[in-house]
Length: 432
Image 1 (cartoon, rainbow, N blue to C red):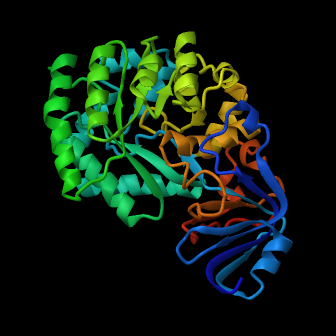
Image 2 (image 1 turned 90 degrees about the vertical axis):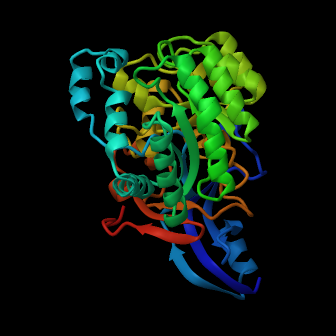
Image 3 (image 1 turned 180 degrees about the horizontal axis):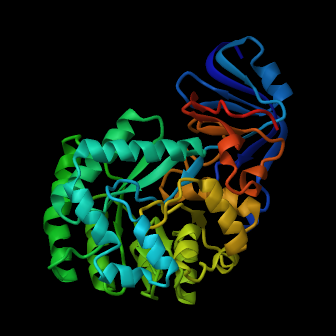
């Protein structure tokens, strides 16, 4: 096939396509049969989209008359889809390393929260930070995620709790979306906590009547873009009626519902998410059996966050039960001041060890299913013709090393490619 193309990735030991038939997500049975080719190649066009992916000999024959801006020899290496991080809180100021010591000494999440720490500590520092300061630290965190193989990241506001700071955070996220070579799904999370001096009902009124209309206006003016609406549905934070009201108001404005639920206490959040047509619900450590059934029926993704359960010493989400009952299971890092993890490789490893997922299940959950949780699996999460050319190349002949090498991504991830552009080349890779 003659013509000019942006990139040829040639002769990989393994090419992990994940999907081959345009699947929006994979359930448990499909996860066991990830599409993996030996000796595979990928062609990406000048527009940044995948033009072909398959057997190297067939690709070489098909594109025999073509010219490429760049060719990468992938002999002895693996090509995989860029990883998708379906839940992060990466825009904030301040540092909560002192709280880690408190947690190690036995303080619970809510103990710290009620003592003025946790979210409220970060809110105070984020409100006082300049927009450029927030962008600088946010950019640094995103680039760390990128170097660990994440090419699409969900990014929340939520450390403002007042309109001014929430807008400041969303502007920072929008700036990154426009300036950086990484995919971003933007989430308004103004209902992350109840502001000091207010009741949950007052905070809900404020969000529905003031925040959301203002954000819609900013979106219509082209100043920001928001994909999702989030609420921390939790005992002592936003109860079920308040959560329902905020999520429905966001949905009415065209936002996808993607919220925190059933983390510390059983709240029937999963049932609410299924009822409202949520794209995803995150956490779910305390999900009910009825909630699992409801999410499976509604095709609402469960975004599981193994770092949170690990750091807070919570019981693990019931990944195996969810998979068995037909829930779409996705993964996220929950990157935030309370759970400082930039690497989906670490997340997949923890999912396997602590949540008893297989490596195939974890990879599917961090690619196609995480993309589905963000409503973006039509363009992300697998290596298929027509999808965006977001890929990683790892310096190993077997893809499983991505999960097996706990904490080893610094020398394992050799290339990160977004829209066919090499956005990271690891100069420290010395050979397998």
